[in-house]
Length: 406
Length: 232
Image 1 (cartoon, rainbow over the protein chains, first blue to last red):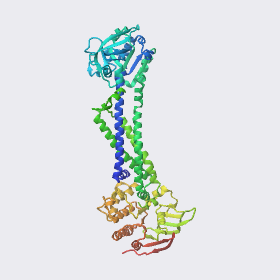
Image 2: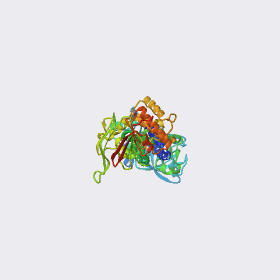
Image 3: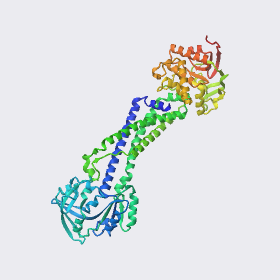
Image 4: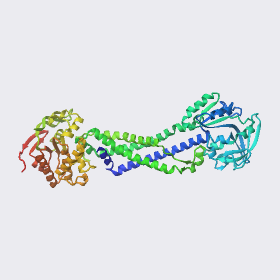
């Protein structure tokens, strides 16, 4: 019965309760939708970063990353790649040859990283082959095909089948040039990556730099179970102590940070919203209590215990908060579900976003765990906001309260 | 059998500075089945006395015994529970719970007493019938007249099966007809059910109905008149 009274009490002043419920609804909608949007954004960035750009684990010569020297290749890299490929937790392995070079079109030139890959093996470690909207993945060009990013194509002002000249120092230190033809232009939504990385067939690059085709500077590993990343990285590192074995979290700390702290940012944002709503709830409930001093006095006079009065007012506040919270969460989830397939187009800001590696088409994501935690946070807000008004109500003496003229 | 026993009751305000004796050595007893009015001018100590009898305030000294329990020694939470089980209240401004229907208002106090649902419902219906509100069970207070609301308040006061009903100016907000009607209902309950009523009132019509009239002045009982005439 006390729950029923508490619920009915909320609707005594429909306008006042309606306003605070609407405020909570809008606040929670904003919180939930921003969270699902941000989560989708993070997930897309992580997926792009991990599945397209870096993959799960990379092995290098310990000194390779200092200045990308051609001679700092992995000793016995072909054997190592074969051994890693046979490990039961490994999904795919792609040995790469990596060279820093200058690339030039008929218009202009720029510095890039050339990645010599086995196109088929590369398919087992990244999904780059699915991100080639123009041209085909190492097909359609007979000699020296090159796959370049959309951003680089724009910078060099080249199109599909355009000729590009790569100039580099071979293993003997001689400056040498060779022509390549654009077989495909990939688009991963990360301007920096697109501008800096070009892909050629490993045998073409090996011939170009005068290295044996079996030599690799980078072995890229894709795992069967990403959740075992730390353990599997440790396993490979344990076996190849002379090489540098790093997970994607170690290689791209900004992505690791995004992964580790993304949820914390979301919850921090929700806490700020709930904190401001909490003050509104306290104010509303204080008004409700002050208006009902006489009634609260009467309830205590006829024998309603302080605990029951406290409980009734707590319930009132919590139900008020939960009503707005539930509606807001429901609305946030509904809008997320409505937009999660088509995505939200931020093309107006596309340039800036893609330069930072973020896609301009964001697909919000609903995570049930996150929604449950937000629901619990709303409940806690209701409970905390209820304490002060409820305690205030208990300070009145029934004999005085029932004689107050309201 | 005495329902209320008051001995040397004192209530002093401003205890540390200028002492104001709201009640100054009040002694009296009220027996089961009495229909008593407490009267007196403003400032006579009537309200303070009523608060003491209702366990809403603690005396400075003296004793108040209700049904054999000295309530002046009870803690605040014990007093709440004591009021719930022993005293029925009727207030001047009705003080019903506005969000509940007449039936729910009466039932509420039995809910606080944790009585079984069936008992609550049966007693509620019989009390509402006794106060002439059959058919208005599902009306909220704002749909009832002042007289009807006060009758719900009487039914609520009786719902807990109290040792006595304390009515503070119960007719102050009522018109003549409603006052007459309410007094008749309470008198009937008093006679037929032997329910003890104690009124605080300024209303001469209540005084006329009362079979005992206690007059307070300056915190003392200056007269205690028993009419001992039961209505025909």
